[in-house]
Length: 409
Image 1 (cartoon, rainbow, N blue to C red):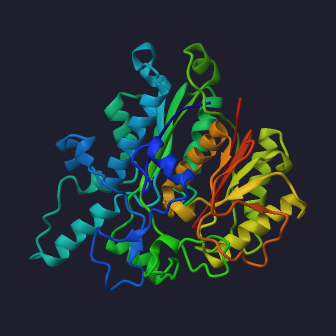
Image 2: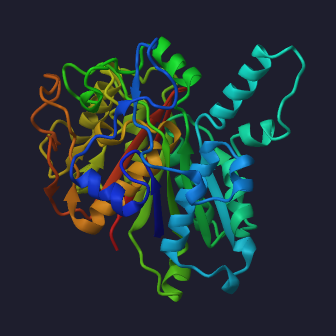
C-alpha cells in the first residue's frame, strides 16, 4: 500500500503545488541559473524554483550533504508526514529505506576535483568529500534523520532507478522483512560536468530559444530530453499494518518487473523487446491484461529512438487494437529527473487514480506518423477519465527496463 507521498520538483516544492502545475500543463524548463551555460550546446534545464535548503534543513545537515541528499530529505519528510505513522508505536527495525539515485553527489565531485585541479597541487579535499559523494548517503541520511533501523540501501539503474527502488521495497514488504519502507529517488544533475557530458552525447534538446517547448515527446521535431532535478518519495506499507492504524491509502502496488535489453550502452532496443517483456511481466503479476490499464505514464523522454521503441513495445502488447487506455508523457512538463523520474511519475499515477484525471503531454504539435491512431495520447490539456489501474514505464542506460503498476482499492 502507498500511504504517503512527497515531491520536490521543478514544478513545485511539495505535492500540492506540483500536482496543481501538472494538471495545468505547465513546463518547468528555463535557462540554467546554476552556472553560466553560454558555451554549452544546451543552455537550459528544469531547475527547482524558489528552493532554499535552509528552509528545511539545519546548517550542519546542509554542510555535510550534497544537494541530491538534501532533496531526498525534503521529499521524504513530506511523505513521512503525509503517511502519519508513529515510530514510537513500532519496532524501529520494521521501518526501512530503499532510495535511488543515478548519479549521486555530482556537484560535490565536480567542486572538489575542480578545486584540486586549480589549486597548488596539495590534496586539500574536504573530510566530507566521500560521505557527500557516495550514492547510498541519501538512504543513510533518511534513516539517521528519522531513526529507521530496518533495511537500508540505494539502487542504481540509471533512469530506471526509482522504479527499481520501489519494486525492491514492494518485494521486501511482501516477504515480511519490513512493515514500512520509505522509497523513491533524488537527483541533482544540473552541473557543468553533467550537462556537458549529456550534451556531448547529443542526448539533450538544443532548443535554447524556447526551452519551455523543448521537451516534446512523440513529436516529429523532438530533438532530445530536458534535464531536471528534484526528488520523489513514497511510503510503502504492509496492508494489515496500514489498515490497523487507519491510514489513508493512495493505492496498491500490484505489479512490478525488470528486464534488460542486453543491446547497447545508451540506446534502447529499437523494437522495444525488453520493454515489452517487462510490461508483460508486471501485468501478469497484477493478474490483469493491457486492456485493463486505464492510464500509462510513458517514459518518453523526447528522443528519436527512445520514444518510438517504447511505442513499438506497447503495440506488441495491444496488437495495435484500440483500448480505453490513456497515455501521456509528463516529462514534457517536468523534464527528465534521471534517477528520480520513476518516483515522480509513480506519484503522478497515484494522484491520477485519486482524482480520476489524466495529465497531458504538452508541446507535441505533430505526432510522429509511425504512431497509430489506436493509441490514445492525451495532448495539451488534462482530461477527466476513470482511472482504476495506472502503469509507469522507466528505462535506463545499460538496458534497464523497470515497470510498476498501481491500482485503486
